[in-house]
Length: 333
Image 1: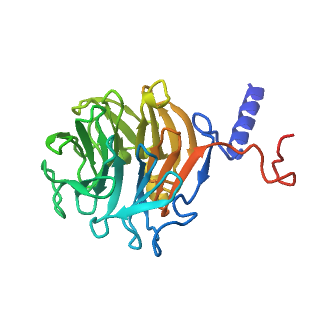
Image 2 (image 1 turned 120 degrees about the vertical axis):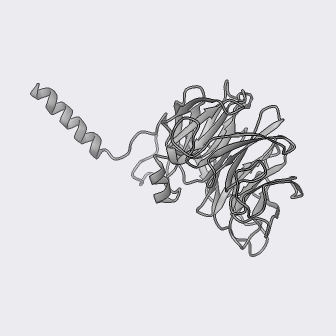
Image 3 (image 1 turned 45 degrees about the horizontal axis):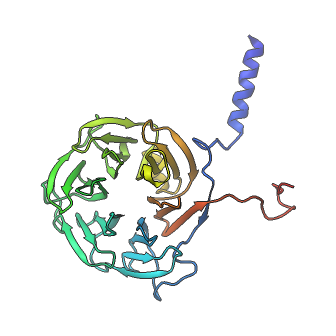
């Protein structure tokens, strides 16, 4: 018995002193381009980002970011290599938050400062406005600080997570006609405390980041509660890569923190990217990254919108060796 206790105590001390813990599900082996779109700098003279709240890419690989600084347009577009293409939106938004690109290449954003949702063409033409500027509410034609948009797989409906002021998800037709909403503030199934992100899988199931409750809740297309993932922390943002993107089945990607207190304390700086099995919630891989928003491309690039004021481009790859034979970890022979 004493021998067993000695072994257990020694193991516990070693674990406590070992420092780094294994990455959940195994390390995602990616490299990073820290200042995508800014190095090399091809943007108009004087452009400088404030906090980047969201990022997304279209089918052609063009990258759209939504940022809060006064020294650049709120929506900035680059090609896949990071060369500036165009920008728009100066003076239009109270506080930029979410951005998604639909199957037709239209750009949708949520403005949680003025309580509105906008749909633009990919060149910046305003196509649809939902919500009443500066008016918070819970009616079919108002929001209270909406956060995100997600599209049904058939293209006939979309969902808005609403958001910081309200605690609900709102469903609309593709033309912007109100269909229904669900949720209220609380901790029970179907209740929310800051629904911060929303995504839809290939079956039509709706995934909602219930951030301050440290969980992701899953519903059918009409808001019927199905299940929840309680093992993924305080998720900032959700992105789902469908089965036809090279996977046998849907995969969920998230940027998350251990819990809501860590997220708020570190202001999103201590985050982790995770790849999740949508059927079980099992973590398939993870790695560190700051971040408020993420988008995963068919090439398995991960774009992160970071409140540090930049866009990260993570791309598959891992260094085979370091800087030379004099480094602490020498390259393999």
